[in-house]
Length: 95
Length: 486
Image (tube, rainbow over all chains, first blue to last red; front, side, top):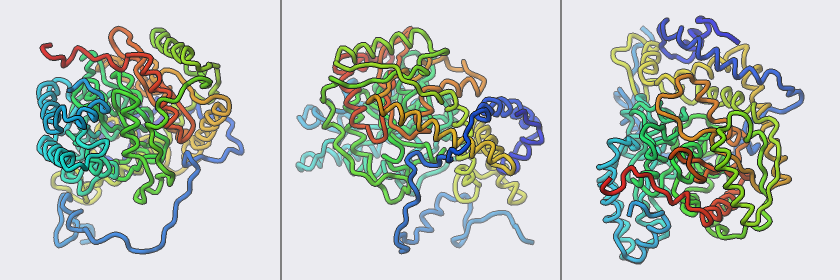
């Protein structure tokens, strides 16, 4: 399936990935070729085949609902770009 | 010291021939002398390595040494290491000093190993040539004009050049086996879930698996035993006992049934690679194995299915890099969306963006069933091919890659790069284990024989590889690069 520049811009926006028009134009070609390669899947008869999400068909394990983690906020915030009083700083969202 | 295997080094340390400090100093000097050209390390942790070596020597003096005490190794820079930068080959994580250790890093440290540093890799493990690293490409020690393979290219090149006797890699579509093949070393991708992924930076979570890269199958067995096992912190790790992988190494191969998938010997396979692989299979026949042709009919769908599933999972996994909690953040963001968009645009390289875009597109409204669900259905068919084949044979064999290492810069088009992984990618979709062992050379560049087994057949695979290495000396060959006086 060939993509249009608009498809790439839309995916970039959904992925919150900044892309200027020139870059988007370049990706149109690449991504179209990748999707063309991927489109071979469409010819396969998969009627009645269950999707495989985990190669060993494992399902999510459950454990007792107990607190096992201690508070390590300071340690984990040490690698953050901007924090203050234990909070992550971002540009103002609500005026 | 640099040309010894891990097993030989363990014996030498135990016999007191040299100390772990002496060994570590010698390898650090070698890295210092040679890695400027090779670029196999992103970060060398010399001080921490010497401290760990001294601890190992003290443990040995106190009679508390285990089988891995004092052995040096390196970690692909995808494994989180507390207090040490974990870049994942990306500008996004260039400033990321991990606040915790990956489970395998913890286990290796507890076993007394000495990490020399973090090896180069394709950014976020996306690539087959190590050319996608923010820290520049790695060169292949067998031929500096050639790529080392990827994404664990730094680990493979470092081992091949004798900078370190073993390293950890990760394999999502061939990223341990293909660089092992290109660099003439032994690399094992374990069964999905065999080794904990906790603290291993996620690319495609239903495919990613860490594993050992070393000179020999015996060394891989030693390392796998140290890193495998159930981990409560990785919900996909398998609750199943870990055998001593060295126990069955010497078992006879008499009666071993080898299957050759006919799809792995078709168009696109370089004739010289095929000749080397067939010669290796003849060695197995001389060791008492029988060989028959089998079919994996959905082989050609593996790359299309992978390039839906892996980018889709990547686009979700990599959404965590938002410029807020850790990693790269752009200057002077005007609002929150600008912060996200510019941080990610500046932090990610081209191949990573390509896969995020593909994954986001195929997962977006209206496309999910046609792509992701379809690919997961095909994934089941691909796995079934292997399950059917293993009804009739014990292991499958074929080439690890259709060609030997290609030249740096030779593959500009992403799709032609993706097609390189034709023989390795289906194994991750099926979740089975696979390894590559050195099996010859084409014009001075190594060829890898790939050996595949059923889920949790690591002991058998290592046995099959080990017996081959007792009958051949391909794994003993060393590149001219880095030879003393060279």
